[in-house]
Image 1 (tube, each protein chain N blue to C red):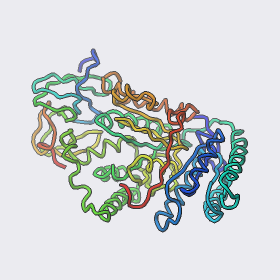
Image 2: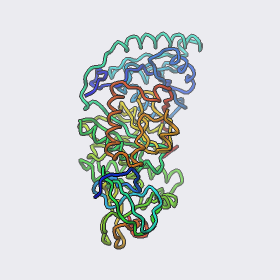
Image 3: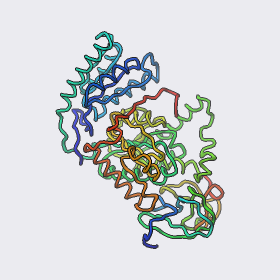
Image 4: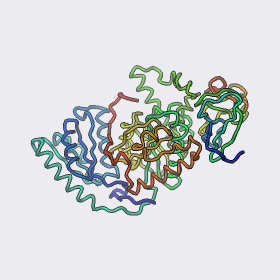
Length: 94
Length: 385
């Protein structure tokens, strides 16, 4: 975990228990992504291209595991999702 | 604690206004003139009011009674066409211990004489009411309504979560919070039900959604959930309906759900905490419900900007969108747009909203109060979701 050194963030994690963050900009595959987590900014690598407003996995998520955003369950993984991958309708179900 | 106006029924106002309420659309002009003539008054007018039947009549009775009884209202003047309507509305308000006077056009005779009489009655009531002083009050007497409108990308990830944090801070301090807008919680009702303190609250929240879906069916929309989240929502990054709804629900904070009330019913915060009122989603109708329910302050998060407020209830405008903060500084009482620029956390944004909430409770004016741009709208059955 890195200290907050600059004020540019690319994604925001809303609740401390979330396993996804919402991207504020279009992210290219392989890009370094600064994720605001509470007061901290954590840097990670994007494994997929992720459009603005879409979600990035903050950790490895097993097939069938809950997806947490807002500290609540918003759906279930329908495939194995690796850290940094795009999380959306292709790998999440209600 | 905060400094508020203690009322005889134990409620506490954060304002001490004389409410001028037109009971029917035909006297709106007269009521407006009376309000313009006397400082210290706030005006509520509406469309309709004549010959309403059934649910519409009941909603009107509850809405006007509730607004008159709002703790921010020190006394109320009902402006109406004839004495029958005056009696119908005034008697229960008087019985509940609130100062009420009627200005009845057909009894007085003539527009100008009615305005003159109404003006004198209003001036005397303001003279009386304005003699009440603020006293120290516990935060358990404060009820915040939460609202959002003109939503955009920033609403679900910055403004609403920050407002939700402020809501949690208020409830931690003993206060209460009311969330509304039934259509917007669709898809998150199981999560709301799971937060309920008892079976009744859980079944009431699910029932409120079912009722709204039935209303939609009657209006010719067979399945309102279908196509929700919409193709546009999905393109924008929303994956499930629960995710979409949580973006709105989270402005109410994260505390257990204590109870559910119907549109314009009183919210009795016993125990204090988190409540839901079933209302349509358009902001003016929803805030009229919150005002009638007894909320003394509304926290209103907007993405793109939305100018509405309730005349009796100071409405704190909040945005998490940096462009809106720049373009509409006269609409925003609090900007939390620096969440999305990485300068502050959601919690810090929530603390900023909470500080403003306490300042407004103690008397600081909101922009919509300064501009006098509040608007009340009582729902018409089946017209909007």
